[in-house]
Length: 171
Image (tube, rainbow, N blue to C red; front, side):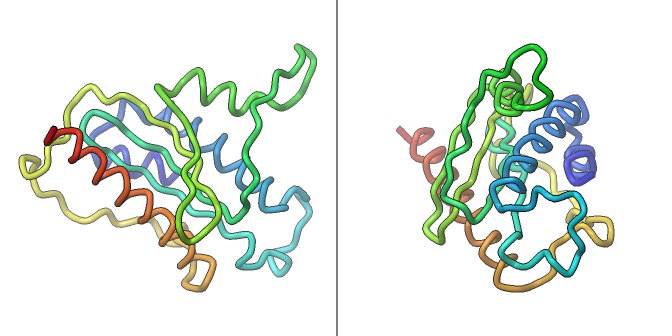
């Protein structure tokens, strides 16, 4: 829902399905890495330790789909057999994305990100002013240490890639 809502707001409708699938796969990996694999889990059993963070960014000619979780575990791309039920998540991400990788934010954990090419360029200072994105009720994490850590990690990634892009453009 977040991906569809955000990309429609940004007028990137043609990228919604691909970005939503990639986000779904990365979120699934983050949830599993955080230890929530029981589908019978009660809401009281989920703590701030299980918080993940998600982010979409459009920078120059690329759309970034990013998911943060607290664990240091590196996601492993598998080669499942034809009969296997799962294990294809990162294969899908690799097939659909221009590039994907892991970023280690200062605050800890990891951000797994995927980069998709956009058919337009986002140039700073030349885009029209848009109203702020208003998210539907109930999809934003409540305030707390886990949510704050997720925000800090994603902002760290935002700062790092923005500085890198500007440095490359100036060179």
